[in-house]
Length: 365
Image (cartoon, rainbow, N blue to C red; front, top):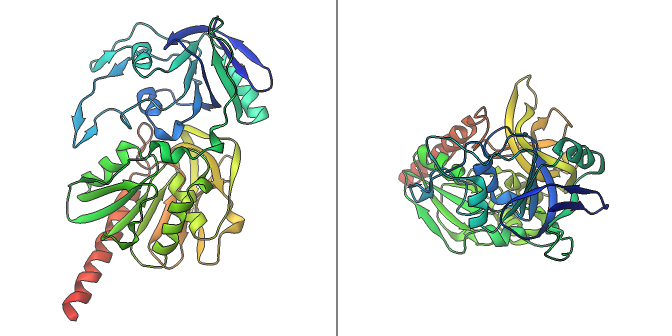
């Protein structure tokens, strides 16, 4: 019988689906009710065994492989990034108008094992009390594997693009540093009339032309991305607008001199409430991260922009005088609530204001 074994010796026995094989990684949980195709293709889950707490998974199958504007229409990247999947109840029978295949068959294609019949409520309780733990999925007839800590390697390097890619869209040129970007970030920028230049995580963009800079989400410890941080340190000396998302929030903070730390078990799901600092306005957000920014270490030029209403951790920063801001949550929210999608509009407005000001300066010379 397949088993999930945690690094403290706790063991859960269930039934196998997906690929037949073993997997090891960091065990994390997601509280979302829907959106498993999007979550499983989110590069931020690289190296993790994902526990879905909703008790019915697989009932609407997996959608087709349609491509729109060079991007998969229904997925957040071109592959499944999780190491393994853990669910309470797996539905082998699926029904949806755009379903192409079952979740199990899709996992087999990507060589990702799954286990069902697990008491995910009991498992989540263990993770909440102990914090994020290492774990492994094993089959009795396939021998033993070692535990694996993905936070000890540079996961970003394994999920970023290898070379520059351009997505034509409009008048504003956005430099997108791909640390494991979700496709919907690109879609949101294109829908607002931007041309997106997607570059690898360690690409030196500081000498290139662009109107605005976006630092994407991604997996793992932000301090592993020293090359990105070094380039951002140069970028914040200029005035071109910057927008960081998830890991991008942590990288922008590190470039500004702040520190980051690992959360006990992270924030993952579509229902995280955040408060905009200085207001009574709250938003429900989609999140997927295991590290956070230490507000107490922000420099004099920076301030918190959003705060998590559950544990009061940082959910974003902004520069006091320059057009730089970032969010720890996902304003592109695929899946999840679209409460904060307006932040893309605000960013593009700043980009066009900056571009217009530069154009006016050129005319006056």
